[in-house]
Length: 110
Length: 115
Image (tube, rainbow over all chains, first blue to last red; front, side, top):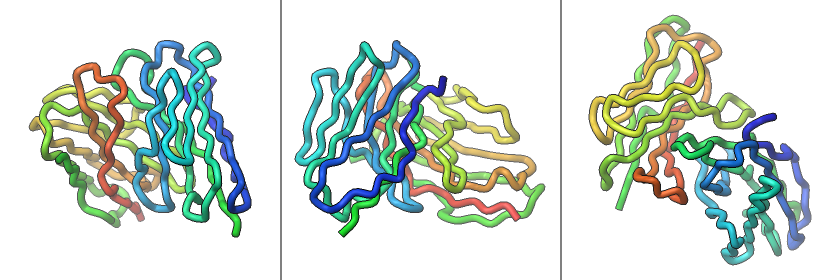
């Protein structure tokens, strides 16, 4: 089983729609969870951290399910500028190794 | 505030030539440092990480090596490049000391083409 798995997409979604991404991780001892956004040919940038109680930042909501080893990202009222690759990021166990999923490509259609 | 510098931005090197990529962090001390590689159309692969001067952990056996000669300096090297070394190399830092929710912060990356 891969350490971090994501649906590669692409997701083609009309502007204004809601889109959800899922991610599973294999190491039950993982402590830190993040969503990053990567634009074409650019470095990844932090979108949000994911907390056990779930957290929201504007149109973005992240959820963590430790029992199922699963995290999610919900984007509401999607905008053209949301088009990017979304990366699920997990620390591997109780060390400082940070592992990225392969990313899910999102295209917002006008 | 903290900043991370990575250079060069682009590099074209022939097969068999050496490589040295440098990354420095400012505004923090004793950061955890990371090197990732992203091949074209692929995900980020962790190459090396370091929790302190001279402490390097290697994730993937290959012809690359890393060194941390100073607290905020991380260097990626190769003695002889292969075609398969082409990719987007990213340096990142993170707060150390068990701050579990501290995120990674990336440099702008180096796009390496081996010809």
